Length: 175
Image 1: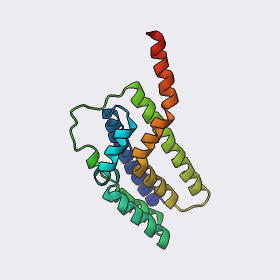
Image 2 (image 1 turned 180 degrees about the horizontal axis):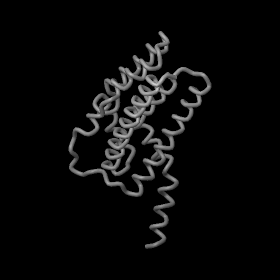
Image 3 (image 1 turned 120 degrees about the vertical axis):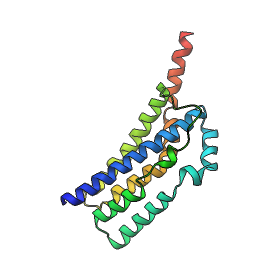
Image 4 (image 1 turned 180 degrees about the vertical axis):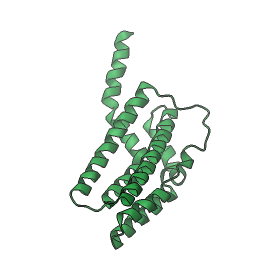
């Protein structure tokens, strides 16, 4: 891989990771505002689907992935287009919330579980690339993580239920 291609891949990956971080922070804050209750959070996701969940960049990303697969575009071009499409996270920082995100122990546990799920997706994609797959697998993982971050967060909250119950029982024993 040439220095030019490597530079484009690294720059694009940084943009993608930065945006995933911004989106995840936005959705953990929203989930926290709903008191970590899945039902109203899910309803909010449904009512804000076009505004917050599925953005134009996701459609553009799907087009880039499709074109890359259909025409076997070079890796540097795919990642360059990706950096342009996913370089902004303006939506996830434009609103000034009345109540800011509080990094409680529960929020940190949820973000940790969410990050672990993201890491699993990334490792699978990276292993596909190492096995000889095109760089599309890596971009597809970025797309899937970025698009799925609100749902992965919801899934992480389900996985965290036993931890939260144990934590809650600890408080009940003390009182």
